[in-house]
Length: 378
Image 1 (cartoon, helix red, strand yellow):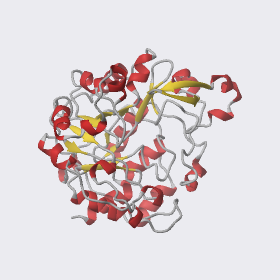
Image 2 (cartoon, rainbow, N blue to C red):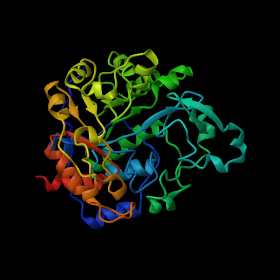
Image 3 (cartoon, rainbow, N blue to C red):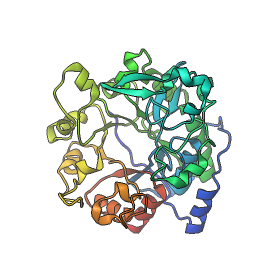
């Protein structure tokens, strides 16, 4: 287990006009090969509260694109979060799931029509196109699209504009932006469905370790967290990585590696006081679903905080819940602005309530709002 050091960053101070300009004009350029990041600004100010750009600035750009990651960093996010899957030729790429039909234009490519199939993903059948059935060269012919267009219609104007990035391209982007913005931009990669990929002979972990090591990021003071919803792969990574690890949990179900091995424990067991003490033997933090920290009451409003934050802190773990989003669809009933699910609600109030519950950071699709809420709290 590694010691989690304070994550240093310069809080966002850009005017509303500057943020608006960043949203309208993404500055995505070719990845840089320079590995040096300028630490001057990082040493100037610091705060232990962590803001993670969830899949980038996915409230404003199609998720897991270099444009989304860059925008999150320019808004002030401390970390950007690439979810990792693999190609057929074992290159780690950023997609939320192995199935890529919902986030790319693959269905519009007749040359790949025969690749559509049904696979069993964590015990459930799923039809579509899967990243591991494509080489990187083939995947690069596709373009990203908005995953939830009914809620984020404004993002659909960027459909077809961006490629699927590799992990290396994401790292190169953070190196360039760290120099340009004069503060370190971290990465917070998630290994997606590790048992699924292991069963196909395409384990994610070896390439992740190799890539972090090759980039000088496999060290305790690197601005990196590695996360997973499963347990066994985190325990294995604890022996190979020197960066902090985070155990993700869900409000329902169980880690799929538990299911496969016959372990009857659930995520509720993992976030119990005893479970969190066990997590602390191989990880440095826990990433719970929001309602595991503050559940909703019978009316859909935020209820009373659970013991999770207290118990995690007693175990020596940081707590980074997910996912904070501005649309009414994702907010408690009393923080919605209207009955229109795509309209923006009071994300400021939700974040403030969770901060008062003692969380150490959060994942947000709207890094600008999370950083503005952070500034208001001081």
